[in-house]
Amino acid sequence: MHRSDPCHDLQKSLSDGNVTAFVGAGLSIGAGLPGWYPLISELSRRIGYDLPPQRWATSEVLINAAQAYINERSLFDLVVFLKDRLDTTGKHPSVAHEALARLPIPLVFTANYDDLLERAYQDAGKRVQLVVKDTSIPFMRRDLETVNIVKLYGDLTQPETIVLARQQYESFFLERPQLVKLLEVELGRSDMLYLGWSHNDPHINLVFGELLNRFRDFMHPGYAVMFDVSEMQQRELERKRIRLVQLPAGSDHTAQLAAWLDSLAPAASSKGRG
Image (cartoon, rainbow, N blue to C red; front, side):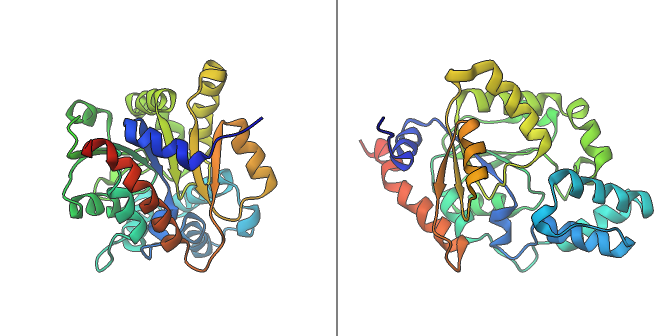
């Protein structure tokens, strides 16, 4: 059976205004910030916690390591560490951030704590509405010149919202039920574009799995842009009805991703010129 080109289908969805983005740490790595494993690895070394090599380090392992740090030191020390390592002073949004900000996507979910997404959209001349707590939802906007950025796991400027360790994940669904519902609604009604995201988060996968069982054949497609994907990962993406856009493993993933995002822009903006 013939399968259509995922890039062509994504361009049409963008043109129709049906795309929501989900951004992971991969985009911020391109701007000079550390990824999740190097971040937790440094925490672990500070307290003598044995962390397996990155290849074997699941999300659960990293969450437990962050909890061990809190148990040994304190939550305050963890937040100070994150503020130091993820500080964006002197850093700029990557070319991938900038390319994303040029696309007609009014709603972005992110697991990142930094401010690079906001700055990229502001540089692109768009208003940013941050959604970090349930009480932020009523202030979301619908106009075309605004992007709503939902920081599911918190913001560095609001330390009480940070979600990284086991104790914070345990309270996530209780403290942010409306944010979870918002994510559920968008997963159910939007074509989700995943950028810099490994799809290994156990809590997001729990939400996704419930929706997959509920909607089954009616589940909207997702689009995951990734490099160096194993056959096992490909099969898991297919199970989740997420279509893989695999870019060649070059030396500069950020530049490759930015070029790919820019290739979507002409078709995405043609509707507004009609």
